Image 1 (cartoon, rainbow, N blue to C red):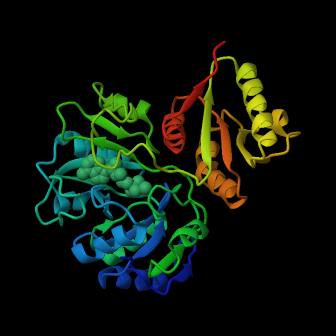
Image 2: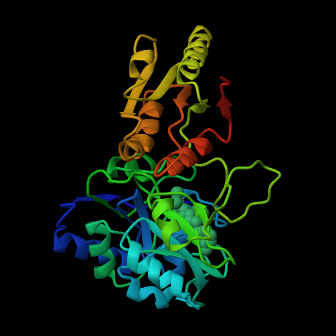
Length: 356
Ligand code: AMP
Ligand code: MG
């Protein structure tokens, strides 16, 4: 089964969204429709979070398994009690410090939140996004908006309205085009229902400033292999994946890693494979002469730019029809943790470590 609709696209001013267009989108949400909209992280596929039928349409439109819970978006932290209960003091402090922004909190669910939103769990994930279009839509709709990323399940998340249309044209009522998103990877998911506050997914909110407020913060290791039971739904290893096979390379000797990648590229090309590389600006010259598709993500120290361009880069190489994508890993700190997480999952957990 699928959700079919005649998809309409509205172009909005990203900073000062036009009130009449926001009103139109809010009416669609309130009427049970699906509206894709930009957030500061990625584009979301939104529905009225209190309307179980509308939320069900999100799952069918995305072909998302109903075991994967959806984040509820609020217009303000003052709405928290609408969807969560027994809210700990720490949640209120974090909400004050980090919202609006790319931090999702997992809290105890208010019974009025439909079970389909949370995949039947007694917890609920919530955040207040900072994108002016998202905030204006939330205010006008005046209901929590359930919204996962607006891609087909397991595809790279969309960072432009065009990406949303690539995956969901004909399966969503309205797409609000507010240009490219600024962060480019999803929110950080922080579970406050466990004895020790636990990061379930690294994302746009950085671990380092969170640790200042939560000294005992722990990070869930997410991709330890199939034998480990799922620590929480939605943590499937294969995710964010391009159609092409992605090979992720790492190692402390940069020149050895590059040499190894060059050798593998030569071999793949001889085998008749079409090869793509996602590269930093610095490594660009090492790949420029090879018969491959090369997409530059940005300077390797500019993790914000790398994150912003990461999913779009995967989609570009898919569009060019490559069979294999090679990527050299980036530094694993700050936003680099979220970048590493997305890459390792796009690679389905296979990392090629080059010894010194
Ligand atoms: P998406 O918005 O598509 O990036 O996916 C949202 C992710 O948030 C899910 O895949 C889960 O990993 C996480 N999430 C949402 N709700 C919960 C919850 N109640 N408990 C734990 N994780 C959650
Ligand atoms: Mg997603």
